[in-house]
Length: 144
Length: 144
DNA sequence: CACACACCCTGTAGCCACTACAGGGTCAAG
DNA sequence: CTTGACCCTGTAGTGGCTACAGGGTGTGTG
Ligand SMILES: [Zn+2]
Ligand SMILES: [Zn+2]
Ligand SMILES: [Zn+2]
Ligand SMILES: [Zn+2]
Image (tube, rainbow over all chains, first blue to last red; front, side):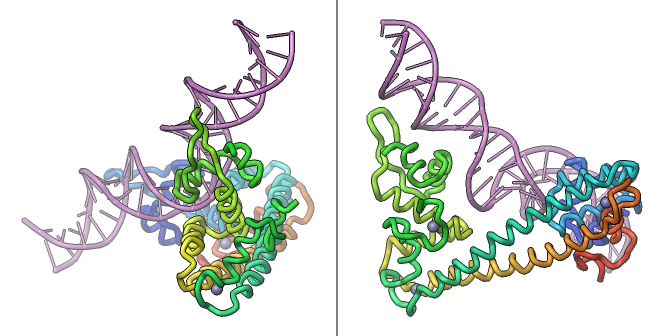
């Protein structure tokens, strides 16, 4: 299997595959006489695993860790669980932030009475608020 | 005001301020005879505005655009509104993705029956699923 | 006055996970 | 014989900072 075929099979860019090889995530395949990379089934499996993890937004360092567990199935899976847990924690933290952000943006959006000149726009007015030392609608880190 | 004082006042790293200056977001201040940057009140205002936007996760290019509106208050604020709207759209899209992600991670986390050897761990098992062509628990991009 | 220490300067490189060339080689179809 | 699709290596760019390295400056203490 040539790199383009592997890319198509795994729904990944060719450059991404070479990148994974460069950083040591995907083992270097054998080469055809012409120098082209020649992949076997195992490479597609491993690449699918990686992409699957990436779809879960798991960082590549953590994917590398998971791959080590896959390669050595005698290790205690508690570390796998912990890794997923910490990933879940990160995702939930980001979710909280984004939900706050959405509320703040909606509030901000409602500030614009009617589109007119920027001088009257409530949005810009609101964004300038912390400038004047007013209570900040979106974050209070600089309000304390 | 020296750069460290400005940094403290705006709750920003010194390097961040120099970075904003380098990319043209914050105007270069005048210099003291010793070469130190000497900031005026306007700089703190502008920096607060930028950090306020960044707290709303608005990209620096968009912040630059907003600053142009601030500087020229005669422009039509419809563009401001559109910018906030598109930001809101981005945030909501990311929210949707993250919510799916959280559900998938929870499902994945529940796969681990009891921590034991990695060979039996349902999490690794599940992460390997797309490898075997099974229906993918987390993303179907490579399942169709 | 000597020294420490905090702060300032410039410039460059690193982070993450790719993505996009530039500049070349290989191969099959028409 | 030419076209075009694919492959190769190596390097640089993205965003939004962050972290040095290698210097200069300013203040307080012994
Ligand atoms: Zn998947
Ligand atoms: Zn408006
Ligand atoms: Zn704010
Ligand atoms: Zn487990």
